[in-house]
Amino acid sequence: MINVVDTKKLSELLDWYFKTVDTLVSVVVADRDGLLLAAKEKSESAELDIEKLGGLSALVEPTLKRIANEFKSSGFGAGTFDTEEYRMIFIESGYAVLVTIIDLYASLDEVFPYAYIMAEKVSRIFDNRPVSPVIPHLGNISKLGEQVSVKNEIQKISPEGEFVYKLILGGDGGVGKTTLVNTFIEGEFQADYKPTIGTNILKKECRMENISTIVRFTIYDLAGQGQFARVRQSYLANARAGFLVFDITGRESFQNVEKWHSEFMKGAGQDICLILIGNKIDLEDKRVVSTQEGENLATKLNVPYIETSALNKDLVDEAFHMIAFKLVQDKLQYI
Image (cartoon, rainbow, N blue to C red):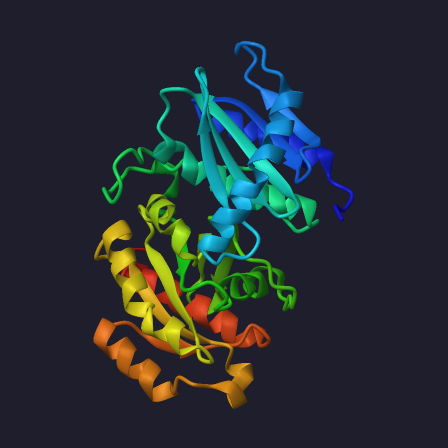
């Protein structure tokens, strides 16, 4: 059952989508029966029958479910459909289906990263979870794996000792990345797990009183499921910091850390500052990855290692403050 939706916030989100994606023609949010919930068109576009587009999402619903089942995801799938005039991207977004309509000759690779950000934000609005309507520009992402210029995400330093960095969280789905960042930002543990769709973007600052320094993070919480591997490269560019997160109760998530490390190196570059995190130490009785194994892997990857639990805010804060200090320690002499 759909909760009461914040229509003002949903409208603001659709407006931001149009500001960010030049090739966008129309966007529709429909429920799983095809009922129109929200829609917006480009003012100068030809007239579109929005009601029919809402109905079309219901026709595509079986395809979305099949895709989700094939990829063993939980609650989301994606599909595309071309007409003689337009390209359509369908993404499951919690209770809803997000339908993105773009120009016929527009690049799907260019639009998909933004569509997934939109889907995550729509899902949060329908769940009454905190969300910002702002959709950041990801730069030129036409070629996968190439370094891109994202001017508003590059580190900035002020004379007062304030730093701004882009930080990414990577790791398999379900290892606790979203809960970690929510604990850091909101200061409380949220037990109801909802998988991230593509990426979630948040902001938070670390104040280090002993050195009179503030580090402001733009945090990209990346979806861990395999079907998002292609769009993840779009979110990695110009990241200066990152967490490689695994679940100490899940050996597979630990074994996949090196894949995530390679993905970070490819997308963000060799200079990214990383920390390896073994999460969920509150489940010590279910531990299958020892502390020594975590430390050995960290040594192999040449990164620090820390164990955390989202139930313990102090440990989570320690992880963020540790990486904040690593980022600024060689610059403090200039402040």
